[in-house]
Image 1 (spheres, rainbow, N blue to C red):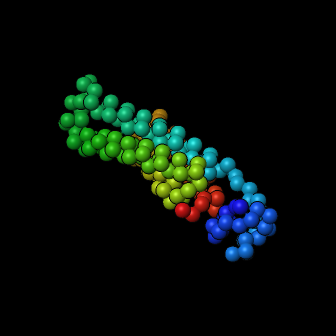
Image 2: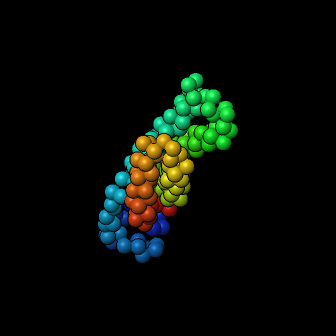
Image 3: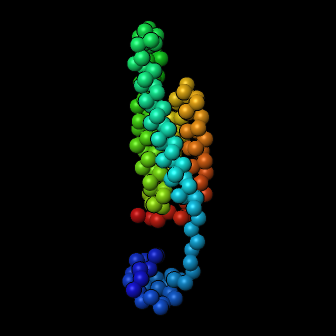
Length: 154
């Protein structure tokens, strides 16, 4: 017995078509590796985003430059926003990457890649980490967008 991928009804293995919905069971749909590649890119970008957040945190609390941030409230606020967004991006990017590898919850994967790209743009001050995160996020978005049809509806 197998489960029809379209309607979910259990049917005999030797059937070429589902007797319930008529779905062809002989066509073997070839899956690409794009969702897996997108998921791996998202996980790497999310991890780099977390590293980026820790660098912002380190810069914010080093004694050598702390007086600069106290005198400039906007710079202090910018660093706090970058720290929060990078940590949030790690969580959403990691979740989106896992869902992309599993080919489920397409919208959550898109949300993860969106946060990765947006946070890399916001925290561009750390360009040596933000630029690779941005590039990985864009590549992940391309792979994700071109493989939307491979995601299961949950």
